[in-house]
Image 1: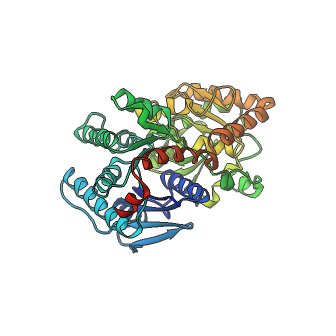
Image 2 (image 1 turned 120 degrees about the horizontal axis):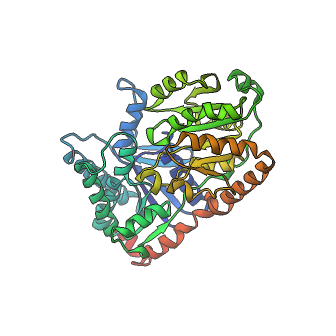
Image 3 (image 1 turned 120 degrees about the vertical axis):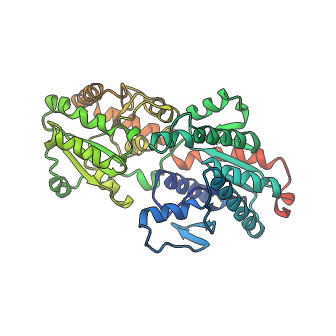
Length: 420
């Protein structure tokens, strides 16, 4: 049985797109007969503190089980000026990986972005003679810009990019989640033959059976009988929710009974609520706030169209999001901005509709046309569902890892790996 240690920024029981992808990968690998565990860096505890508050008690056990998966934690904290702090963070995680490898003896290390975890795994793997696969889910310098936590071209941006390049050049194999990220790495001069793609996916066993619409919940939210446009996710600037709100007056002019349902929260929440309150379409916009992950399907069931108006940027052009795939799996119509990450997932006029990014009028027009095409709704839904089943079902996609693993494990015999 092949043992794989996944090196992670954070994990369950925290809920995020990052942790849900991790869960899907590990669960699918377990089903294929792999023995898998995860180890998280210092930022897992920092995320817990940020969510629970500075005074709250957080779980500091060295080993934690979540949803039937085992996650080892890296103890301690780091301090110091930027740069030195991250270097110390890498050293702590690398040491924790080495200690765990001495006890559990994995066949390979599978590190997931950011590059801090990739570098920690690279160091440990080099010292122990264990192969390392590094998986990039996004370029974190671009994600920081998108989240408002960084500036493109800054010293931190350039250093993060340089570390990424260093890790990519010195691990045994690289995996990205989409063509956009792979193409960008190749343009930097990295060897295309070392870079595989493992696309975002949906666990259809968990998320592939839509539930019935709850009339009482719809009435409680005042959604009426008209079509419902939905957005479920984090309220970051790059998501373009302000453009969606700005599109509502023009949409209401063509579809007077339409409603907009916004589920989630984040840094832009207060500004978006103020914008909605001042909108001529204020009566048609509903904010729900954050909901538990197990309740998300109830809100999907209320919607007809899921809208993803991401703004154009390096982040949105290079990275494919998970949410449109979830929407297709739930049998929802999809309308999204025409950025690179969406073009990899959505075929305009077949599995959804694409519209010009950063343009509320284009968003309104695309939504209005989609709502007017009621006779084609079943075809859109069927094409979307088929797309997810054939190209983005984790039960199938996880098999792609086997080719990568076999290639790197072939560099040395199993006996040497376990003797490390």
